[in-house]
Amino acid sequence: VRTALALIDRDGVDGLTMRRFGAELGVDPMAVYYYVPNKSALFDGVVEAVHDEVDLDGIDPARGWRAVAADAVRRLRTVLRRHPNALPVLATRPVYSARLLDAGERVLTLVVDGGLGPREALDLVSCLRAFTVGHVLVELGGPVGGAAEGPGATAITGSRHPVLAAAVADGYDADQQYEIGLAALVEGFALTRGAA
Amino acid sequence: VRTALALIDRDGVDGLTMRRFGAELGVDPMAVYYYVPNKSALFDGVVEAVHDEVDLDGIDPARGWRAVAADAVRRLRTVLRRHPNALPVLATRPVYSARLLDAGERVLTLVVDGGLGPREALDLVSCLRAFTVGHVLVELGGPVGGAAEGPGATAITGSRHPVLAAAVADGYDADQQYEIGLAALVEGFALTRGAA
DNA sequence: ACCTGAACACCGTTCAAGT
DNA sequence: ACCTGAACACCGTTCAAGT
Image (cartoon, rainbow over all chains, first blue to last red; front, side):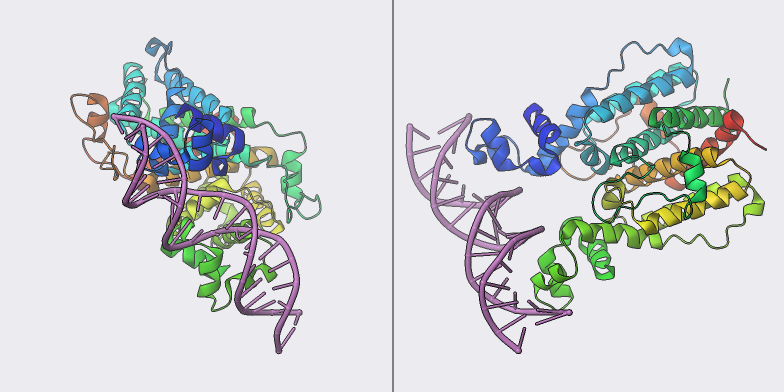
């Protein structure tokens, strides 16, 4: 599974091929099928492997649920950005393995220990997670300010897109925007669902 | 392009094949290449087609930027949910066509007319968009409360996942959770970046 | 200008066969 | 138990050829 992830990191999702995978392992391509039922299961393994990189240690519930939830999801973001090629797989494949369920429980427990009710914790973490995945998805898709690659790409023109141009005028920083959204989501949640 | 989207809606992303596409059009499979350079361009067309379904008419800036932004993104969500099979394509492919840029400008203009600065409008809409796409992505991936399909799927067990079990105890409603996150993001944005 | 069909270099997966 | 290799039914794309 580790080699599968490495292959995706290097060559993209389409670069992971049962044949290439076998070659990388120095083995007949079809030998893989003895250990893995099919390519789909291999992808599931990759999803788990990426999530395993998220380090939840050292998050202190005593700092309160806002800090806990924000930190947990920041760490997820860091890992996601480390594997840009694997992200489409992550975002697209729902995997309900015991390992992933355990990780979810762990995060929720931290947030609950930070002072939120179970239901509120789940809603908050789910929303933060959705925001994080979505944000990294567009960030890695290319800069919002145009400059996109490929044919058919169009740049922002001040005459045709005055508001967009004005918005992007003094730069565009994905990290900064992520923090803005993160803060808004957490504070807004406190406001509308608020506990302490 | 319309038939391409229909094919995806019916048979999934992998169901869209140049050969099948040609067949659906009642034409030699390879005739498609006269009109479209490659499959990638066809996908770009599909992304545009889906976005075109988002109806921005009748959103009244007079109701203020909060209502405008929330409504715009709710309408996006409705469209995304209408094309579950196309969503992975949407989420994954950045397309910077003139058409999509125009649509973005239009939304931003509405929000700015609703009383927000250009930069704030871009940050808010980007974050809302990321949240919306991410949320629909997990919603369509399957219910969070387990019940996932496929082998290796595990259910939540009260003993192993007490917090998760407690959180899901009285049901789980994706629409409701989306509205919670949406409200939190908008209100939190008002709080931290606030204009009127 | 528009379409055809053969061909090329790949896929994922199955399966009988080897050790 | 673990690996091989031929085979099957597909892919996307190119290209010479037809009308």
